[in-house]
Image (tube, rainbow, N blue to C red; front, side, top):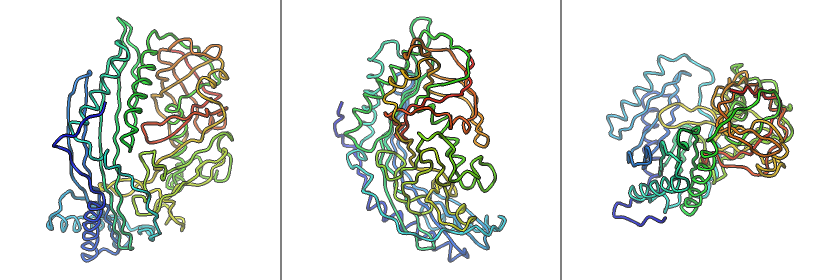
Length: 466
């Protein structure tokens, strides 16, 4: 399916938008300094997005958003103030500067409230593919329609509860009183499907799948792959039986492995969590916290992942950051504030947009491939037990305790799937079980275009049959 051009085609000119947005950021920063700020930083975002939504297989909504936001962070007397605006007139900008400074007056002083010093940033090759950024509303609707039709055509038992197709072009810019002046643009097409298989009175469990890409040529193969993967899992959710209760090895699909084990690990690797005594990794730097098969890193220069970018929310350079190597904790993640607390340099992990102060987190993480072969090879090694593809539950980021339901789960006998399962409970402690990772697959999967992870065989998990 190759939608044709229409008269409504828009153009996206990254360089022009970057210059214009950066100039606006610089102007607001200068206004704040003139109004009495000791330090000031403006982060701007200019975006155009097309969103197409389908419900029950039919087109429900088409929406186009086009706008910009400036977020101003000021420090005065070591007090923080923040305000944002989506208006560009002089009166609104003056009000924004005044509001940020007024709010700073109500904040408590903090000796670590300061902007990070500027550092050299090496620009990535352009992240915007003009052909993808120029997709029209009509083309987005047609891509979405064809995607839903493809899913439904693969198996008549499929019921698409909702699906979507989005195209977003965005420009970010930052101007700070420290001398930081940077801008970068990106464009991504993303899509998703959520639904189930229905065969008479037999209703399978819900399943979800999707992806996000920067190249138009990659879109068609990805749509086909996601449609087939979704239908395969959804139809296999039919005729669900029961599992057996036990404590032992469980095979986790990439999505479930990330939700149960990787997400709390990334949260605990935050330097702010460590400083506030909310991380079980506080005294573990340089120590083995996981099995030696585990490698985890942030890859903000991997253009295949949606979080790629050359600088973070504070204008600090991004770089590949090994977090865990062969099971050993390599570093904590720092934004400007966390770095100031310890008198060190930011690792470039400030996160967020123009509507709030910077947070902290990874940009585009990947879990290293193992030596276990593909999924079928891991199933053969696994032999018998629970295979979980999605997890619905809670994981305490401070303690690592988790409890929830295995979704799209399968029972494995003799190294192969023999039946789908009704809701089955999982529980354990993520940080303790990281050391029980027995093997990782050689094949890794994309997780909605934002991360890359393998299948994982983990021992010591508590399984309770429903």
